[in-house]
Amino acid sequence: MATARKMTAQRNAGYALHVFTASGAVFGMLALQAIIDGRVRDSLIWLIICQILDGIDGPIARKLDVVIHAPWLSGVVLDEIVDYFTYVIIPVMFLLNTGMMPAQYETFVAGTILLTCAIWWARTDHKTNDDWFVGFPCMWNLVVISFLLLKTPPEWVVVISLILCALQLTNIKFPHPVRVKVIRPVSISISVVYLLAITVLALDYSEPLESPSLLTKILILSLPIYTTGLAIWKTWFATEKAPRIRKKSKIGK
Image (cartoon, rainbow, N blue to C red):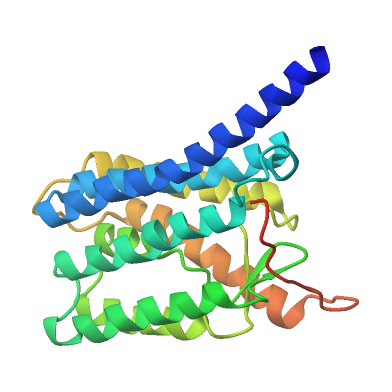
């Protein structure tokens, strides 16, 4: 009897977590509505909430063994559906509705982002066995938030966006901020500082947006600079016995 109750509790916890993951789509909808309504501050906050949800559901899923206890739903498929919505579609809408790019380039850049992200997510090799992403991961939510808070010139938004799109189709390895074991404490610390910084700046957002201070630039640019350094090291300088690519699974997170 006790075993049956335990199994039921584990099953319920697993499916509750799947619902928690799916709720990211609802928060994404709130971000999208805020963008359409011109409420930039609200959209920033909802995007950050989506990022936080996505950051914590994976570790919880592994802790609960949802693959075993809640197998009716695929955590990977569910997670990637929500991620494409919150990491790609909503940020693209953000770019299109905030005047961050020259109007003549908006459609081209937006379409390129959607195309290359779809291809990247469909790649069977987009993550290695040691949890490095292959090609730039589609974290456009953080990209567009950084563009906005740094008041990036429109021409640079176009150039950087196209470079990132091209990087998605490469074999350059980018670190997962939590799961990669190489200097993991440093990666987590920098990621947390970055997330806290953009959260504080989002909560304090008002228009017209003032030019970012030197401290703001350092806090926001620390993560991409650090990530770029690790990507260069892993791709061209790290010594490996044999490159192993993890094919995408259809279960788990």
